[in-house]
Length: 88
Image (cartoon, one colour):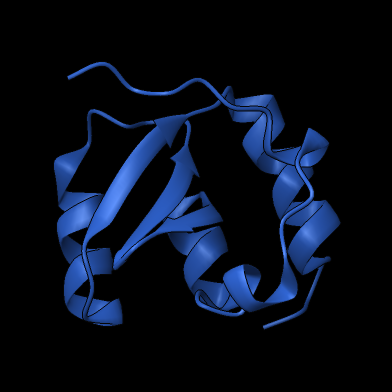
């Protein structure tokens, strides 16, 4: 299936979505949660082909995960914007 292309810093991501993933986890996996689709959490990643990231997130969060693709610079900027330097 084709992955959605997103620019997470340009999205209005609600706090209740961001709170689904801690800052430490988001930075470790370089992902940013962007929306929910029923039970599925959609996360932006600069490496959506790395399926082990999404398998780990599914186990950690106990819910289905769907990747969306963003550039490495966009992920870095979004992590800073939404999670700050040291927010966990």
